Image 1 (tube, rainbow, N blue to C red):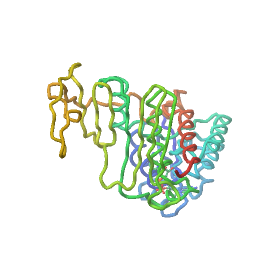
Image 2: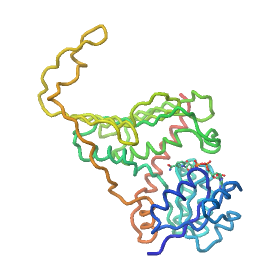
Image 3: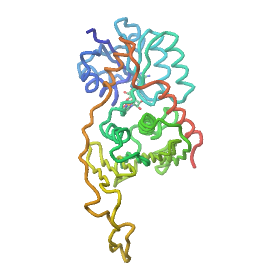
Length: 343
Ligand code: NAD
């Protein structure tokens, strides 16, 4: 099997992670022929990691042995780099968010179509074990139909790095973590959005959002809360989901948490408990025999890894797992949230 020869544009945090961690996991399918970064020190870092560093973007694009490029640069540079690579005859993997807006994405897709090259976006969090677990609960319904899904990521470190603070580079948390969480939920729930309201947070005083709460109702009745926070010294669970027959909490990426299912249709009247300075039956826990704790189901990705799929799309004309129409739908939604601006 011939490996696809890749070059990487941008050797910062994510470019180097692709090079040293993600791509080696598919090393029988993809090989890294070289790297280019605007900054000399990042090219030196690539060399120290054992990679050839091109002297310029032109040199990289002119290398006929390169069949595909990965773009891992700040968001505002994706469009021009993707178009240049496609026009140079390369297939393209592009980091998320794919572009600054749908007009940019449409330009890229038009070029990809005209040169008949593959363009695919690295929406890698479709492969996260915590997401795959929620997907299993949603599709296999051990808790009944899920009617409420809360998806959160919370940190206490503010907006990281430099360009992520600036609008002109496509900074802000909606375009950063938001694009992952919306991508997961829209990939999961096969129903149009009926209602959405988003509160962007500017608590840290940056020109871009440092987090947000988004409330969605889908036409199939499922309600979703998506939250990204960067000022959370105490965090809520990564996922909290409710079905008619139970509730699941996935606390973190290591899959700590619990899944509780109701075992009896008729639940005996709860005994009142002391609550603060009062009494409550409503908020008393269900009787022990009325529920069971489920083991976390095994989660294996039902689809091949990102680079295995990219290889299949390029070499065997397979269907992409991350479809450009899905990427466009998410970007269009984020664009409308940003256009609505600060509340
Ligand atoms: P970074 O700042 O760590 O690295 C970006 C690198 O690109 C820098 O080394 C910079 O010098 C270089 N660069 C900038 N413009 C360039 C150009 N025109 N040509 C060549 N090199 C250029 O940023 P990062 O965290 O690695 O983010 C890069 C991209 O990866 C962003 O789009 C980001 O959203 C994405 N990302 C994705 C994930 C994920 O999980 N999928 C995680 C982190 C970042």
